[in-house]
Image (cartoon, rainbow, N blue to C red; front, side, top):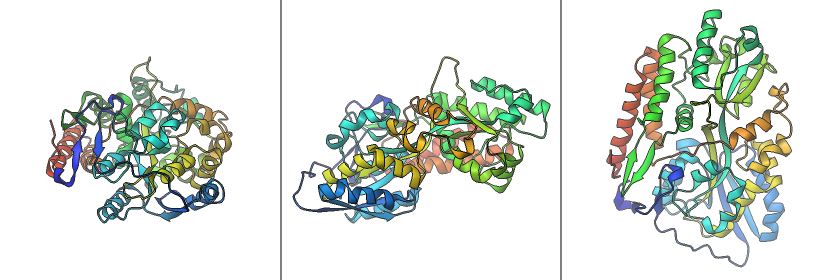
Length: 438
């Protein structure tokens, strides 16, 4: 996908808060003027129960506006990104797509997503600044409306913390000391594990530390995956693994589930969606966990990273961009739509107003012992740090799994794994035809 395929970087000032991942999508001029007569839109999404949510639109606002939306269920992740790009090359992409935040630069750089800023800017204040920034890849352009987010939090076995006389860590230094204290008091237990099978977790931890993995410098990309902030994170976790203070096994395995369910592991650095995972992984410990903010690198800081989340975007192939944007806004800001999304799809909404109402008025059943679960979650979500994504996140994530997977297993140097991740990402960008400054 070289520059000859109409890919170009914005050379003007870029959005500093997004880590300068600004791109201009060519050929996405405004051809979305209102039309008379019925409009039919197609929406590609992986969210469970989305057809029931869209029914609310079709029978309500959509009927009034004469805009009908049809849901086409798809796989998520890289599979969907590839399918969107393939369809776009044939000029047959759907009107709307669900896209993870880290996939937006790839889609925009391939001219697959339209700038809908004129149609959605008036809802900007309904989202946390760090969340909205992930959909704005330039100083003015907006390529999607935030749908769901995954602010990161700290989960711990409240009963076992009390049993072993442990305090909930508020800084990462305290987190390391808590891990060591537990090992001394109960050598057969671990505070948590470093899992090298989930790149998103590491990306969120780096994001909290202030990392900016992709940015632009003039007309070139700058890749900073091995920047000081990320090295700090890598050294921290690598050190804990090397000394045996925490486990080094991957998550989402039968062994990991058992460790959580039996109390062999008594804490988990995760995101707001963790209750759903714990319900399945550790059913016998329901009501024994509690949630707290993520530990901080400095006691005077209050910031979290993001693990997961997606948006609703309008494609450049759509002949009805204004209508599509209208639906995207409704889907992610309307009270009834968001309640339905929470009920049918199990999502945690990006809209700040929805985070304390409707489906989020009461705690998750698994956390019935913590009535203020969603109140705390909403407060944490507001502190989400801005992220910086680039056009080949998939390559960086694959490299992470390979390099950090080996390092975690062998308890070897995590910073060397980080350099490998940096080198692989830069090499791929150059191969694709991007100008890279380092």
